[in-house]
Image (cartoon, rainbow, N blue to C red; front, side, top):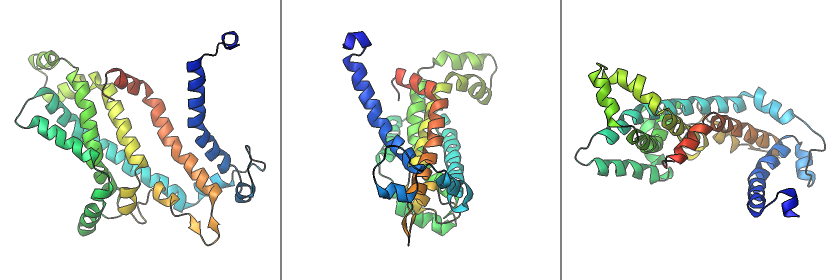
Length: 271
């Protein structure tokens, strides 16, 4: 029977694994298309009374859609800052040897190992003192503590795979370092930049503790907004599910555009 339909053990296992991964996403989408009464009324695999009212609330209520705007602002800021800092740092680690370079590289990674809760209170006190509390740049800079080491680690591996002779040839041809780095070197490690940008984006997008601690109103992200949906009438499950579906969309789009870069990163053993 299995030979007739072309089904083997590995295909069955992969199918069950994909079903296990996609079931929560389907159930979230299913809930987002129901009313609260239907969600709380009983079990159903499909919406009995299909509605888009939950999405209409998200897209028309400023307290909801501004959460997405705020999240995108500080996530993009963090990704740009992290890459701008990590690119020259990774180049230095890959091309030069200096006293304590391995210790410094390991110290960078230890920052990535620490949980965000360790730094929440120091960041809160510091940003409150200098007037950065509840701003987008505050969250973007706080996330750099974790994303810069990760980006340096990823980019250093890609840069180490580029022969040093390319650098020397460019200098002989009269290229300045800035011109060589932007026009020759960066295109050679474009896949590494894409992978690093993906991981920086995803960490900053899904991180909750620091973004919630360092914001209150003006820069409050969608992750913090979703944790404050309880009112006197109870939990609005449909709106919360719709917000969850819309929160998945940016990450899915980023994965789609950098999927080839991620595959190359796995092939090079650095991701």
